[in-house]
Image (cartoon, rainbow over all chains, first blue to last red; front, side, top):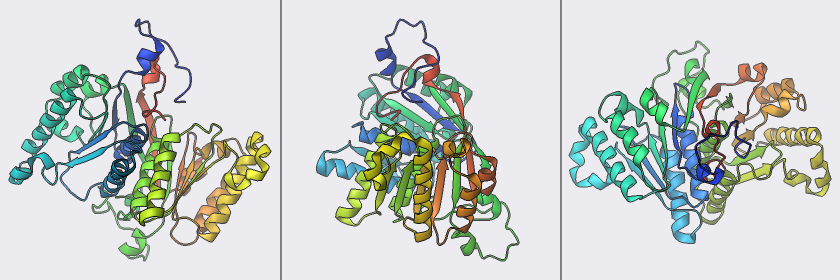
Amino acid sequence: MPQGVPDNVPNDGLTTRQRRNTPVLAVHTGDGKGKSTAAFGMAMRAWNAGLSVGVFQFVKSAKWRVGEESAMLALGELHDSTGKGAPVEWHKMGQGWSWLRANAGEADDHAAAAAAGWAEIKRRLTEQTHDFYVLDEFTYPLDWGWVDTGDVVETMAARPGRQHVVITGRRAPQALVEAADLVTEMRKIAHPMDQGRKGQKGIEW
Amino acid sequence: MPQGVPDNVPNDGLTTRQRRNTPVLAVHTGDGKGKSTAAFGMAMRAWNAGLSVGVFQFVKSAKWRVGEESAMLALGELHDSTGKGAPVEWHKMGQGWSWLRANAGEADDHAAAAAAGWAEIKRRLTEQTHDFYVLDEFTYPLDWGWVDTGDVVETMAARPGRQHVVITGRRAPQALVEAADLVTEMRKIAHPMDQGRKGQKGIEW
């Protein structure tokens, strides 16, 4: 599938190569599992292709996704020591964004923390800091109005260079879905939680 | 969500801990992206939790998922050199299964190669070789009748110890879906291929 022939070729004046090199804006939404996990799987692939990775988690709990964080940071360290792959940065709102450590008290105001996270990502997109961004659970601040969806859509459309962005979370705003190149809905068909199981280390986090 | 309170608690005589420790059989199906990518994201998390990982790719092309393979094997090497994480093995039908190297000519017979792959996985499940298995694109040999779905369902139900298994691919047979603890359907909402783009390195593979 990835290397197949496109279903149709648009009359947009671009060569196949130009279209191929267009940076991707992807959205993983829906009520099912795998939205973030697939984003981190993509990050692993990007790392292998030498694309620098920046992960920004818009979640409260510092425990969330600790397994992926630790594995991705191990890949980043492998880059630092051997040159293989690419650098990896991982930032969490739940602990107060690392660049805001001095103002850690701010972390109690989630709306302000989310806005600060987005402001930093905008700066990084302008400066082309990373090649591959994961904005994990970023749909929630959009859904709650803490971050303006119109601003996000405009920023994404205007981002320079070849910066790929993956946004995850339920209830992705329609304007974001329409702006994205790739939208996947993860639908729950069956889940152990329905049978009274709680999550387990190595599987759920 | 993973660490939340279950929606309901079954009257099955098990403690929460016993239910929590039940090995998971997960299926990622549907026509959308992210089925394999989410499985490899889970494998990365499993690696971090110290669960040994075995990946078995039931696909023809050796190029498929080369990014994830390289990154996962880098994590496996990191384990070998530092003790962090867990061992990783990655086997591909497309190159002839590694344990069948002597019979590489067999790789032209895909039905036989798929059956040989499943026979090996059965052996490994009996011997508890790995803690976390990814049977990537395994639904296709099931769908085509190369591997018997009933045998797979019985083998999974009888597998000893705490071996987690994730099976990916479109058209998962109904009996497999019913046997699984966790089934997610990845639905395509939008995809760059629809706009005439071809896949690109670091993003699609």
